[in-house]
Image (tube, rainbow, N blue to C red; front, top):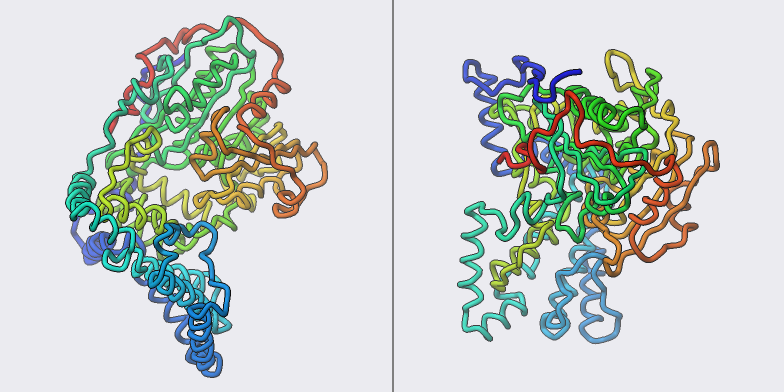
Length: 578
């Protein structure tokens, strides 16, 4: 049995992912691209330029359609005039657009300004979609870029046009702007939200680190009941952020709740990589992460099979591991649960706009200068997907209205970012997002492809209604790629809040339907229409689902085992790496 603290070497960095040493013109170009990324949010400028050129060329070759845009512009002006005179129902914002929700926007003259903005945005949407023949990706890129500019110049972002800001400035004598400056300086300092200490306020469920290698620490959580389920739960979180999204405050910690439901729980805590780990591969994450954890769990829990659970990218990795295990007749899993995890990337939402060969080459040049992708560089792309909610509305509240947002556990976790190894990140984006190798049966593990349909486990899938990172239609596609026993849940909330959905949380609902092995498969929209929503938390239903696939209760296993003795108290040391 291997000692649980024996160092295990990661893959060495090949020349193409070591941090750049300036020796050739190509190295100078990489430094240029890294500098450019500071102003483009990590996006390749040529990707946007080529998309706009494609659109412009087709618009120029469709002069009659282009000329007709003048007519539609005049029609929008006429609608505005009729709305101003009360002769037409005012246009309303799209669902999720909260810029003009304050009642002050509904009073003149701001109501007319609101109408003008919404009608103008509607017209611009028709402009970017008007010429035929533009490639689908380029059309979406032009539409996305146009929307970013329209969001930027929205009157809600202009202090002297925003009635909320004008009213706050009048009522406070300008103190809101002074407080906003203080908020801005605090944000620019990069200080994390105060009040939440890892291991005390968050990531505080009692347990011990029972295994450590160069990539993971494995945490075994202490039992809180006299008996536990015979099959342990192994949680594989994403390494894009720290693992404790599933162990936040005691009241909304999924891990603490599972332990209270008589579960033996293990969770992987990933190391925060630096430049020395630039050559770490996707398969390193499988072997030194998932497979090493499985070995440790089995050593501690005996021959009990494992309820394997993966979240986000951790769920994708877990699916790869499960497919390879099925191919190789490894039957150590009892079931597999995936939370907001994609296995088919053809409908991966607007993140697809950032994943082209040109964009990946640009991103690779950025990472070659440092050996990893920082959390700030990665976070910028996610923020742009919801710029109104994540960028501009925050700026208005904090910098113009002077409001100080009280920190909460999810905010503290979001500020506790991680880095991504250069080689792993490029492999992940190129093989999964760009080439969709996993869904198409071309993803190699140990030199041989794996097939999703080989997985013969009961599966529990969770998608969230407002997920901009793993859209639920994309998560749902495993229904179409595997005909085994599968239960799909669609829950309210987004990528994080939909998963952190503890019992008792108000205003939560979910839809759930089970499909027997070989049963009829619905399309996602048909599934949603025919599945009745239920109030409450899906956690309770998941626990019932685990119970039905378990073999009873046993005494809790020991904390650790020979070769996997406890190293330190949870949450360990890797989660503390900055």
